[in-house]
Image (cartoon, rainbow, N blue to C red; front, side, top):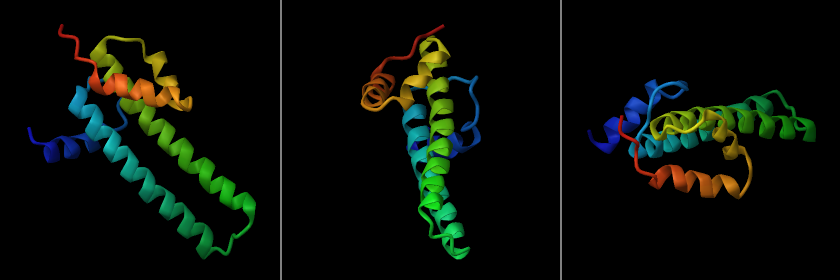
Amino acid sequence: MTFVEKISSSFSDLLSFSIKAGRMDYLSGSIVVFFLCAIFRQIVWSIFLSLNLHSPIFFYLHIILTLIFYAYLQIANTCRRLNDLKKEKILAILVIIPIINLIFQLYLLFAPSKND
């Protein structure tokens, strides 16, 4: 399966917490999540600007909505990878903690899959 095919299959499995994801699936899922969040951020920002909502409250609301959207999708992607590694899903919360999340995501990216 090519990298483009893996990215397209990541769209269908994006919200699943129960399937397994190998290293390339995790990487392609992370790329898809990043671009989806960038698109979501632009859409929310455009809506706020079109409604003339220039208050700092709406700016912070925009940031919070984007972070919630990103966190949910990235936690789902991380849970898929943790299923493949046969680790507890509660570890997915480490994605939210700054600096630790970088180390944890590198571990998820380079850790070999556990075979059944």
